[in-house]
Amino acid sequence: MDMQLDFESGFAPEDAQEVFENMIEEADDQLVERMEEAEQNIQKEAQQRSPVDTGNLRASWTGLTEARRGTIMTEVGNTASYAEFVERGTSKMSAQPMLRPAMDRELMALIRDIEQLVFRVAAQEGNA
Image (cartoon, rainbow, N blue to C red; front, side, top):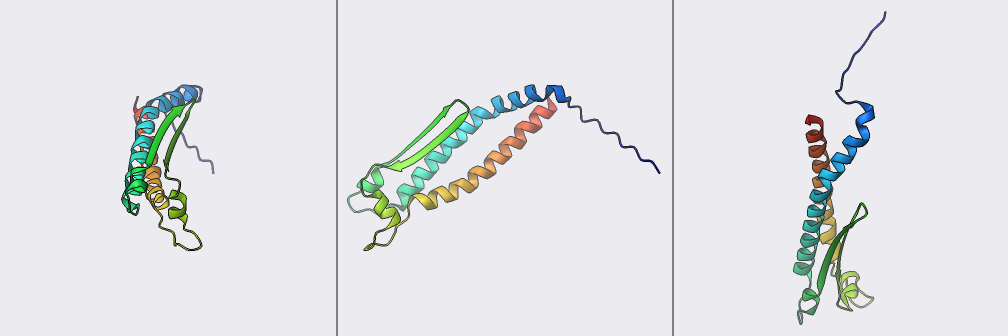
């Protein structure tokens, strides 16, 4: 018994490089925007979670998102010298996490959004 299956994808393998380059170019700006949004969300939540005495810790959160050479980097931190001790705790003071919970929450949303972006761009490219 012989069986033959024919499938035509409409996608020529020799066009793969161009298709992927178009997808990356199209998604790049959207990825940068989403990473900037993630930076702002993490910074805002970390500020809200910061204990307030003088207000210095809450006011010292900073963020930066940079895109260069195919890499997007987002950094959120605190310039107060004691921020790490509050975040992690010490032998005499329990931890009061500010940054880690904010990062964990935003990371899950970011992964979901990037997956959706990739599928959306791929679908648009497939319809082009």
